[in-house]
Amino acid sequence: MHRQETDDRTAAGPAGEPHRDPFAWLDDQAERRRAAGLVRTLRPRTADSDLLDLASNDYLGLALHPEVTGGAAAAAHRWGGGATGSRLVTGTTALHTELERELAEFCGFEAALVLSSGYAANLAAVTALGPHGGLIVSDAGNHASLIDGCRLARATTSVVAHADPDAARKAFDGHEGPAVAVTDAVFSVDGDAAPLPELAAVCRSFGAALILDDAHGLGVLGDGGRGAAHAAGLAGAPDVVATLTLSKSLGSQGGAVLGPARVIEHLVNTARTFIFDTGLAPAATGAALAALRLIRREPRRAARAREVASALHTRLTAAGLTTVRPDAAVVSVHAPTPDEAVRWATDCRSAGLVVGCFRPPSVPDGISRLRLTARADLTEAQVTDAVHTIVRTAPAGALRG
Ligand code: PMP
Image (tube, rainbow, N blue to C red; front, side):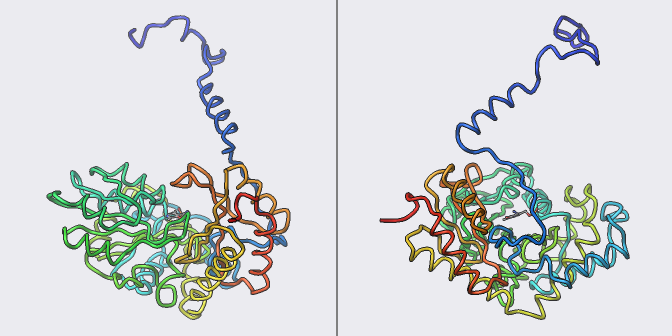
């Protein structure tokens, strides 16, 4: 039928009832979610609550640090509630360039670019550096933002087995022309680390670049929290790019890409999530800068976050729970089913402990988990309390033997 013809189906005017409910299919999906126990709801967080938080990504306990909130407030007063424009127009303040210089220096890279989120940073890096007509080799456990970057890039993506440099080698093998590998440095669900030195060696043997997402490594891994690339001896390498979020260890919001100056210049000129997005809000920029300076002054925080993670893992495993050995500050505890995972997390909350609850489709292998984040500011008594609560409320099927 020609588009301009009308019939009964299109006769209703703007004020009329639609002939057919265009969202009816949403109800089918909602029903399927309910039946599978996978409904998600939003729960506002209460400020100043007595709950013990093992769910946020505030790994170093800096989000409410007075220097960080003070940095945010001062930046908002000086520069305004928002950045007022994209970075290339009016959205770059002196704070943005200071943060870029200090992030690059701290993590050991030549240059940095700040974006409005870690998600935007990953889209920028993968779409701008995933070579047109070339190959992207992507770990099967990668974060959604890297996956979306691959989907948007004008390259062919080969998804390879998780944390398996040999699988990456096979994917590169026989490919001619530009190529890149992308991986989380620390995987967000299980907290396991990518085999970065081995992966970098594979990339180098094929002349491919390596993009690593250090959302969960910054502030936790490497000397004083300089991140996974620094820990692996890859910081500042001419073929390595790292992406960051400012929303976890730095207790703020925003993202960044670190790499060789020519890579950053390319992103400034081509990355759509940089060019067409409003610059990071001054308050977030000021908070991140204050947090970065604090971490530099207090390098013990990174090691403490790792110690807390290790203590949680050891004690929960000894109690009979299945937990993944943490490489950074994320501790993942297996739950028997999605429903039991939700009930377990709810029971923990009733007992005063907030934990993350991950279910399909957020878990790559279909196994639901409680996700705990080890914060550097937790006391021994809080760690003991958390372990008791998690073990006491565990569903029978979660405990081994
Ligand atoms: N990468 C990873 C591995 C993450 O876990 C996250 C956040 N959950 C992001 C990127 C996105 O960062 P942001 O929240 O700053 O957009």
